[in-house]
Image 1 (cartoon, protein in one colour):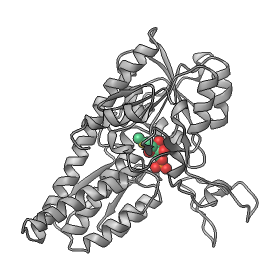
Image 2 (cartoon, protein in one colour):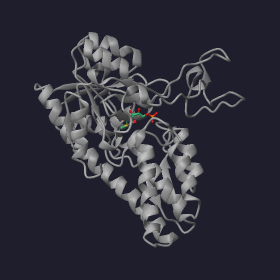
Image 3 (tube, helix red, strand yellow):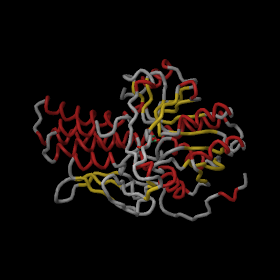
Image 4 (cartoon, rainbow, N blue to C red):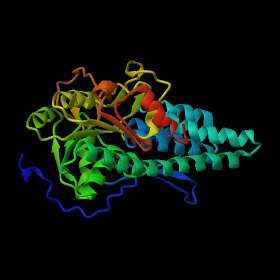
Length: 379
Ligand code: MRU
């Protein structure tokens, strides 16, 4: 397929896009988020002064993506603690704000455990709050380091699987700086290939219904200067049939003990397509996304979201209000019921490899996954 589909823009903004930061203005500590619901139209920050505001930001997807949800959850606990709110109540609300990405509950628990440990050691409320904040900062740093290591392992795997270089990678949803303390998961691998001169093209699935691919991955790709092309999710099949995809790279919201992968709705059909067309299907995720307590894909709670995300086209700059309205332009008759799961589950036998910061697992088996996770100091 000709390169006339290439992005020909000239975006000179930095590749790094800080999606979250802790600030301490005189009025009191706050968590500042880049509001992802407004991208790519405008870069607007959202300032959270308490856990309920953060819970709302998580539900509305102002802050989203598995690793970033973990970081946000940890900072949310710290925010409740330093501002003197009920930490247990805040932790429970944050951990259950969205059900599928395990990182959220893991991040919350980590800051909460640090808080509890400080109190148990005889520390006062201020010391316990400082411990929660230190844990959140540590998780933030670790995620950035994990990103860099996933990129290294992922690029090495790509080079092994596709020795000719000139990779044409298809990705789904959004997995770059906007979901991470670093450069992300799957997108970080594509970025490493781009920097090494080995990425010919990033195919970006638009990712209906909320367009994380079109709005966010294309935004990240444009800023990185890589050659990328946006496609509707249902154009992927014809792209495979045309022999234009060398590998699929996606992230994950939860990987179960047996290696089943929950990720953005539309990932599983890509895995089926990839298998049929003999194309590697690679999942890139930190070990914090591996949930040894969930045995298999059938045990994953898949978030069901509001129907208006499907029956309306959500455009960030066009607010539409009304009883059942969701702020978008209607594209279906009023009252149409919608099926809107946010995620699907890909069974391990369709996954060529899972790349973590501790190395790649291929073939994907429960034993190999457990072994790679055991290498991590944090497991
Ligand atoms: O509903 P979202 O936008 O939070 O879904 C995000 C995804 O599905 C990502 O692919 C996943 O979290 C992996 S991000 C590294």
